[in-house]
Amino acid sequence: MAFKIISSAASTSSIFLLLVLLSIAYAEGQAQKSLPPVAEGLSWSFYSSSCPKLEAIVRNHLKKVFDSDVGQAAGLLRLHFHDCFVQGCDGSVLLDGSASGPGEQSDIPNLTLRAEAFKIINDLRALVHKTCGRVVSYADITAIAARDSVNLSGGPYYDIPLGRRDSLNFATTATVLANLPAPTSNATTILAELAKKNLDATDVVALSGGHTIGRGHCGSFTNWLYPTQDSTMDKTFAKNLKLTCPTTSCTNTPVLDIRSPNKFDNKYYVNLMNRQGLFTLDEDLYMDKTTKSIVTSFAINQSLFFEKFVLSMIKMGQFSVLTGTQGEIRANCSARNADSFKVWSVVDGDDQQEYGRRSEY
Ligand code: HEM
Ligand SMILES: *[C@@H]1O[C@H](CO)[C@@H](O)[C@H](O)[C@H]1NC(C)=O
Ligand SMILES: *[C@@H]1O[C@H](CO)[C@@H](O)[C@H](O)[C@H]1NC(C)=O
Ligand SMILES: *[C@@H]1O[C@H](CO)[C@@H](O)[C@H](O)[C@H]1NC(C)=O
Ligand SMILES: *[C@@H]1O[C@H](CO)[C@@H](O)[C@H](O)[C@H]1NC(C)=O
Ligand SMILES: CC(=O)N[C@H]1CO[C@H](CO)[C@@H](O)[C@@H]1O
Image (cartoon, rainbow, N blue to C red; front, side, top):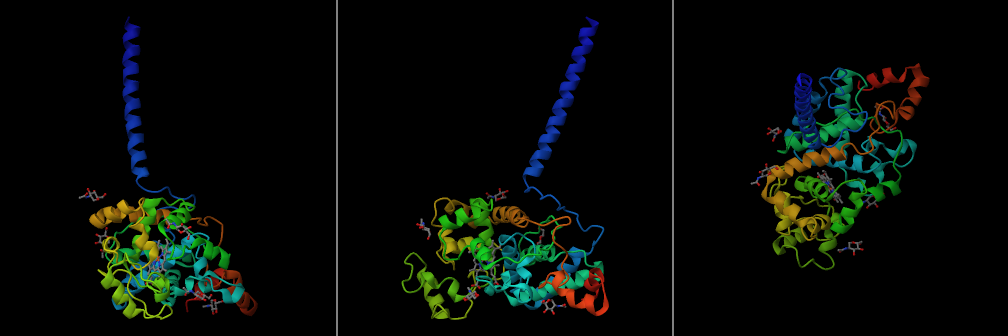
């Protein structure tokens, strides 16, 4: 009898313990579920000992840059998107084809990336490597710069996993074209293309919200103006765009978000509901039955948009990353180390690490 009581007490307490453990595991599961998984080799605190000032250096420099030209934030956000969509977030978008064959930089549709964005990333790299040595990749600097561009334009702040390495490989023109959808695509096409990258309809609508800042060239959207104007588009909006873009090939660059062109907010979705979006891709998100309700939910709730945008950016920011000993930490944005060190190692026998540190001066 006594034995029985002890045993039932023991099993009661072990059931209790089990319940406690289960609820802790559940709470942790919930907490982790709220953020996308971290790719193997990346971590939230990757540079905490090797370059603790990294994020402060980037942010302080960008604050100064945006104070004199707020438009640069859009260029940096788009640069990270292009880097990640083509071949992975591996800094390959920065490689200049001149040394070793064609690079993403000179490919369609990347010619519309802002030249200043490349320069800003290079300046950031110089500042960071001067303080920490050649330990931080271009891919990570580009990811942090995109994050800060969002926040410094009025958008949310979010931590990002770091530890990306730079690619040794150029993306071919075919790879670039296959991975960056055309702005003239409809929602069906965009959803199918991005599903291949494991992005669902909410991700697609949230990421398109990047078009809340920045500009576009006439050639990227006049498909719905000429030769026949899309009858569903807002008439006044279309009339004004025709004045800015009298021809398809004109080089003007109207803003993407007419309500708040330089502010990272949810007005882009309000534009779409009013048929005042620049690209077919954007407009169609409000016509498609899968994405229409998501557009509306973001238009009426900015916090919801910010929350989903952050999750999708963390997801996108980890596409096919190189980590550990893969790739390299590039010293020159536009050339892999093997190409930029070639001359120097002959001249004075410098090793790559030293040259990497010297290259800022
Ligand atoms: C999903 C497919 C996407 C397509 C087809 C697309 C297409 C375009 C096009 C055609 C432009 C204008 C380029 C020009 O004519 O100068 C543009 C600009 C821009 N895009 Fe996207 N985009 C997409 C996704 C994204 C994403 C995911 C982001 C970031 C989260 C983004 C951020 C931007 C920004 C900030 C600009 C303005 C750039 C500037 O002012 O320099 N886009 N996009
Ligand atoms: C940056 O993000 C933080 C945290 O979400 C927020 O408090 C702050 O207002 C944002 N900055 C700007 C300029 O909006
Ligand atoms: C979307 O575009 C694709 C490719 O141009 C086309 O085949 C398809 O019919 C279009 N879908 C809709 C719903 O317009
Ligand atoms: C807006 O979205 C946020 C974030 O998901 C949510 O907490 C809030 O309840 C929503 N607000 C309304 C009015 O639905
Ligand atoms: C970086 O590489 C490019 C292309 O190879 C070259 O033109 C440029 O001079 C290099 N910059 C530095 C600082 O070495
Ligand atoms: C949209 C855009 O600017 N496209 C250009 C990309 O680059 C090619 C040449 O490689 C040009 O012909 C395109 O006009």
